[in-house]
Image (tube, rainbow, N blue to C red; front, side, top):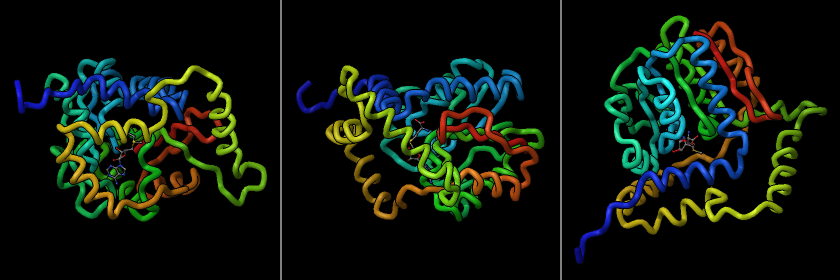
Length: 258
Ligand SMILES: C[S@@+](CC[C@H](N)C(=O)[O-])C[C@H]1O[C@@H](n2cnc3c(N)ncnc32)[C@H](O)[C@@H]1O
């Protein structure tokens, strides 16, 4: 009908999101699967978790698909990705809640619909947090997770830059991978910039982008918080076991038990 904008196919937008994320993390699905294997091994198949910096919900969708009795609370402060995720996944049959909150900011936990979780998971997100916000987030997780609950962070977690033998090795590996990838057939959704540029043209996302731009004014730059910093802050927040359970160079899953 004239004048009415057609509802975008949000599932297609989520699929494109996955393709652009995979283009710089080819082990993304393997990392998701390893995280889910740890969840099942430690918690069984019924649990309630937090998905921190969920984006449009790729990880929550996989977890809820594999574990039909699980529930997830997806937290992200970008209205664009939340709108895409809500459009594509909805509430996943009443098992997925979406929360607008800025992780690590004072009082962010007040936005949560509950304050006790069996697990918290995150992928490719916490590197945006300042060390101070990350420390605060870990203290909050120390309170939100029940005893025996687990935290899993899948992200690029760098070695110490002062380590002469390891510093820079992870970045060089990523560069080598990207160089090899140039010779493979091109996916038009390769690279995050393509996704964001195309999404900006979607009329249904206009308001979300206005808010996204307003919030990004104060958006910090990407941080290089080392693996050892994460381990120290998790231990300080009361996690009893903190260790890497999966890795390809600096692309790792950090696992912690409350
Ligand atoms: C690269 S995306 C990854 C999204 C998703 N976890 C995935 O693996 O596809 C990083 C996400 O973290 C979110 N994010 C970054 N810092 C945040 C913060 N302080 N609070 C909430 N969300 C944050 C961004 O808005 C973005 O959606």
